[in-house]
Image (cartoon, rainbow, N blue to C red; front, side, top):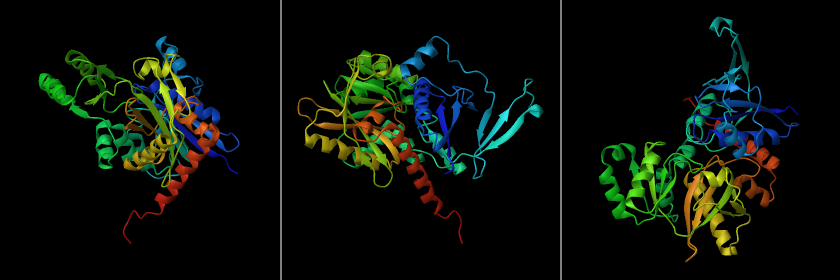
Length: 384
């Protein structure tokens, strides 16, 4: 059989850039070479696309972050630029090799066809529907959620509206527009202080990996936390904190008839599962499967599927929950359409514990992407 050419797109113009490199390294290393030819497509932090001379190899996010901090992973000018063609064609990518003088007339231009794209770009300009929209214009199959699902899942404020419409249990929250924070700071602080009790969590509405997330226990801490989150987003979310909560996660896989994995539990090294706890501190622990009753396990798995349907998910998602240790009530937190994807990331480990190995998981996701694409090709794009 002909090997499928898989464009693994990673990096991106996002503060989650380093997390994406480790995810891509794992995907590239574990694609079965007998069936797939991985093409590493890097997006640097300025947004430039290129075919990577050396694909990422660090399977640990902590290692990638440390390399970045000491200046060892700075982006060199790409030797082979890549440009996705935004219309249906056999040549998915145009590649440009610049000569030494970088003069346009001395460049070598070529084309490359991709059978499927595997995006592992976390955060804005990758997980939020923008990259998915470009892939839709190119009419190329791609792994994971579509434009709508990616966009609404990335926006935590919109996602909560959809969860509430499905009557899924969520914690009390307030959305703060960036321009309101900039011009009506005291009024915003008054409104939140009246409607929510401290402590609260403050988050950028459109970011992952716990970047810009803070816990506030007073009005002054709330002011500081909103200011920090404002550095990353134009829309902010303030959410009631659940004291002494258990953090649960469940993986979802599929298109029209998705399946959910066994749930897992995170024991964070810090007060909550922040960026340092996720990627840099060895003290955090993952317990798979989570120590839950059968009833609780079934409830988490069912709610994960319901949340997946609420955002019209496809392919994959990791669904996060909080559990009150006192009354054991479970609250839906968020849906991640491109979760961390290293072999030791929660999504992969949950499916491994459910009987699906990492290489088999990659194969299943590619099959789902191709099936979804074939189904969409039956739709009419013009009148008879």
